Structure formats: structure tokens, C-alpha cells
Image 1 (cartoon, rainbow, N blue to C red):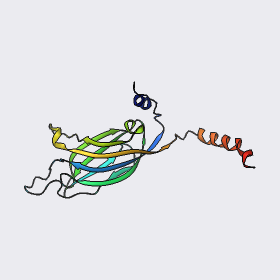
Image 2: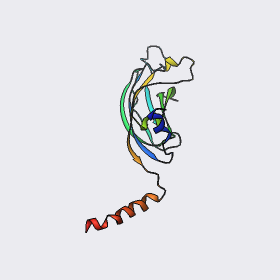
Image 3: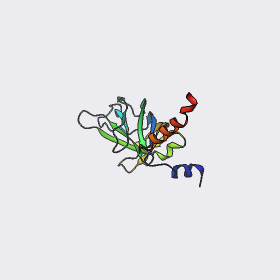
Image 4: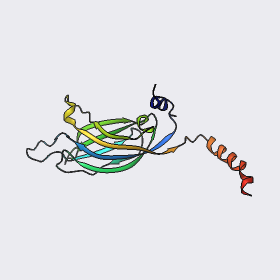
Length: 165
């Protein structure tokens, strides 16, 4: 087992982490606009964890299968969570799904993730779905609130109360 495996195994599922998520760009996205010579899809990306309220949504880049978004935001997650990056083609009626990439939170707690993820799609040829360039970094840890932290902090303050006098 590597140090990374041991760290991932010791992740407390109740501890919350704040991740900075940068959705940098897309590459080789599928052209979902069926009109010939329309220039390509009008993609945007949504990063979220199922069941959590936080969401990061990029701007729509019109007529571009290689969009640059450079959208950064924060997500509060837990160690067992998975972040979904879903890319859509903005349409007048219903937006089309271009692909989904997933990143396990436990994989970014020990070291940041910086690189590309292959988009998966319902089409058989996954290479046609394209890739996402991302950077995900842990910026904060929020301890689980089980009431014990306040007791520990109070004890620590009392212990050092004499130091202040």
C-alpha cells in the first residue's frame, strides 16, 4: 500500500472539506447542433456533488467545441463524495448532454488534481465526447460538529488562562 492509499483509507467520512474547483477548458466536445455550418456546440459545465446544494456553473461559450471557461468556485464536500462535471450544449428548448466526468473527493485530499478527465457519454465512442481540463485543490478542512470540539477548545482555553494573566 502506498502512502496515498493509507491516507485515503483514513479519511473520516463525517469531516467536511472545502475544495477550490477550477473548470479551465473543454477539448474536442461533441457538436450537438445539428444545423450544418452552425459552428459547433454552445457548451457550459456544471460541477456538483449529488445531494449537496453547492454548484459551480460556467458561462456558455457559443459555437465552440474547444471552450475556455476559467471558472473557479468552491464546493463543500465529504471524503466519500464524488464530484460530477456535466457538460451541456445550451439550446433554445432543452439543453443537450455532451458528457460527464467524475472525480472522487478522496483522490484530491492528499494532493491537488490538475489535468484532464475524459468525458463519458451515452454514445458508444467515448473519444467523441471530449475532455475537460480541471484543477481541484483542498483549501480548508471543517471538523465534524459532534459537540466535542467546543469541549476541547474550552478545556484548552482554561488550561492556558493562567498564561494570559
